[in-house]
Structure formats: C-alpha cells, structure tokens
Length: 252
Image (cartoon, rainbow, N blue to C red):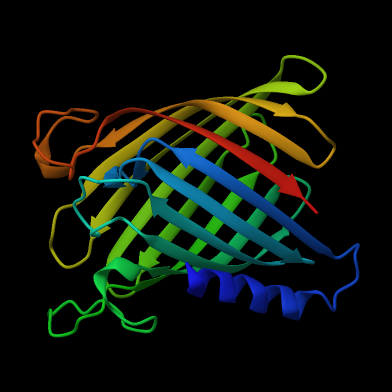
C-alpha cells in the first residue's frame, strides 16, 4: 500500500508540468465480491482502487487489489496485488486504433522484493512478472478489440477479445454491458485454457466528472480440463460463477 502511494505521487510529480489540456487524470475505487483474473480466482471480497494518467497518447496506470477479511486463494496468500501499466495508444485511421504497452505485476504478500521476478526453475523467491501487450480496437458497434499479451517470466501468451455497449436509460443513467473471451497458451508445456466474463452495470453520473456504478458479473474458465463455465473442480483454480461489484469513477 505504501509502495503504491509512493508510485502515484511520483507520477503526479512528473506529469504536473504538462499543460492542463494535455494532462488527464482519472480515479476509480471499486468493491468486488470476488477478484477473478483470466478465469482464476485470486481473492474474495476486495477493494480495487486505481489511478490513471495520460499525456497526449501516453498513459500511466496503477491498479490495486486489497482483499477484505479471509480469502480462499490459489495463487497469492492474501491476494494483494499491484499492477503498474505504461503504454501508448493512438488512432491508425478513423476506424482503427492501436494500443501498445507493458504491465508489471507485483505481489506483496509473497514476501519478494519489488524487483524480484518469477523464475521458472524455482531457484528464486520472486513472484513478480512483466507482460508486454499489443491491442487493436475498432470504432464500430459493440466497440470490439483484440489484445495479445506475453508474460516474459511465467512464459504464457494470452489472446483476448472484448466487446461493450452502453444503453442510455435517462439523462444521467446508463445500462452498460461488456464481455470478453480469451485463451491462455502455456509456452512451457503446461495447461492451456479458455476463459471468459460477462458484466452488466447500471451507471449514474451525479456530476460532469463523477459517476457511480453497480452490477453483476459472470465468468470462469475450463482450467483442469472441465467444461467451460463448470464448477465441478474443487478449489479456486476453477472459479466459475457469479459475483457483484460497486464503484466510483472521477475525472480531473
């Protein structure tokens, strides 16, 4: 938590030299009844704050998962996670945009240092990983996009497709639908698997720069050889099912 605060302050210190019309800052504070990433449950009830900064076509984001209470986990004891993201996004033409960047995943609960990375041979104590990505999005109905991710230390490649659409319900209220489906390729010969999630939220903009949302999610994976969206496998390595979330967004 302290490390995240220091990172946010360092980013603000660099970007406040930008002009106001080029600098964009947004924050989100979400509460999710489960934290599921690519079909794998990392934690149960969690607070998920984020800080997002952009300058022109460049952006820096920090995202946190802070579990509440006891958690039944498969990957990280306690489920604490910090994701640091840097990227560049720009249009190719009136219809197509590209996005390229890198995410550094930090797991404080695994007692490894900030720069200690995962080692496939198991000789090190690190758990952190680095994942470059490349995406293409299309300015057409459902706003489809396709992303490719490659984790340099766990040695997995992920392909994910996303869609979303917002239906206005009133002047300040909307019904927002989203979904994605992806496939993880384990380049070390481990288990490849399919995953997906669908979400439905009601959002209310109480100011021009602030909004709240709440909704349901449903998702899972076919890890361990089961059927897609199937809870027949014990434990949390296969975490299909429903969960819910609520949150607050603000732009500055």
